[in-house]
Length: 65
Image (cartoon, rainbow, N blue to C red):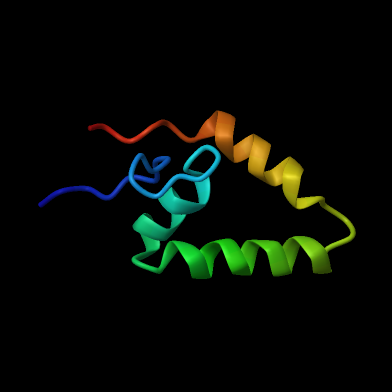
């Protein structure tokens, strides 16, 4: 049984593959994950979405080829 890991996507990347990796991990469409992230980022005043994205970019490893 293969263990699912949260990694940045090489296949579904626009900037760094963070949202594509989350979509792959959850089994969702990358478009839906990106749209949800934008909506939540715009609605949240306390924590800017760009900060969350940058943190995930540096913490998530890149997927193996």
